[in-house]
Image (cartoon, rainbow, N blue to C red):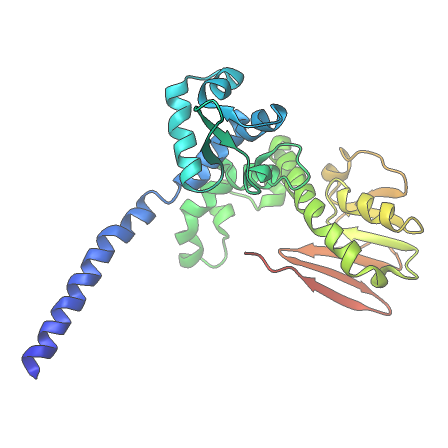
Length: 278
């Protein structure tokens, strides 16, 4: 009996060792998914196929993008393998690339575009803190972002307008996906609300959409002064600069987006909407 148990244990250990040899490569090259998707965005692959209004061959795609077919083929092979694009034969017998629901998230101006969020999170600025994650473990007083850049993200954004715009565009991208779900699923929470302040509203995209859906609302887009100073004017939305740690403009209700939660609160209501992320 003992010898059988020992054999079973050896078999289990051999299986674990074989699995480990495979799994470790996922961590060695785990960054490649984001890198190749970012490459696809920067090249404009999804946009080229969409503008063509139909599938494209490798030759057509490389000509449109102005790059070598051999280099582009390697990128497309990766994207097809991960089901971002589909590869199929055309009626002429050539191989063409076709859009998918996932590839349309990579359209720069698409209705469901996630481009701005992807460009923010894949930027050198946002990737550096991940390389400083151990600093957070060793020193609870410093966030990984501070360990990488010497300041918190908001002070860094103040000193770096390009990164500040990346943040604003990414938050607007998120709002375009989330706000329609709120409007459609929970319109009753805005009944009787005449003034609404969006705390940390960025460039005002959220309020623009809410005011359009509920035109009786007067929106107050509240964020740091350097953020609202470059926000576009919009009917029904007033931009106010300040620091919510000090004070928040008076309104009937306040709206706050935190991670995958939208928090709506007033004197009468405290309402939290949690969006499940796959």
